[in-house]
Length: 150
Image (cartoon, rainbow, N blue to C red; front, side):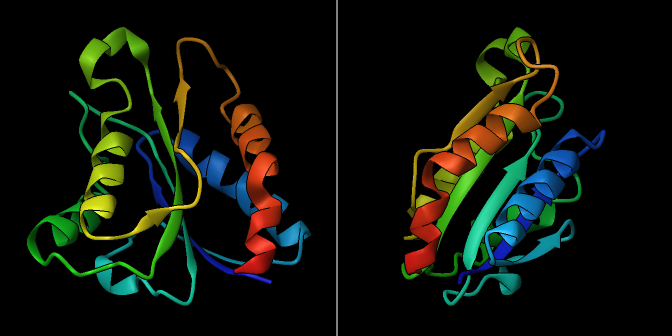
């Protein structure tokens, strides 16, 4: 079974709740999950799968607790080619162009550094979804079997 690092960027707790639900689902499938709300690039390992869940704050900004991770990716530029990941971006479409900005930024940074998305990222709109864990679990169940081969 896969070893999974679940990095969380959260402001008001919704992303943390989604991460906890995803963790429970993955552990129920026999995977080992470590949740990290204070992630840094040094915590990445090509032997583990990265699952990233982040809300968006301000004008498309990365939450404060995940900002050091993003800064590491921008400034230290570690080569991440063996790393595979999946990402959930959370936001509110009422903010227009900055909708899910944190997740989109992190997705771009990871790919620029050679990391490979296992599946396209999921965007969850707070204007349309009161329970973000529901679409997150549906998304995860659609591809979780692929983790068995990692």
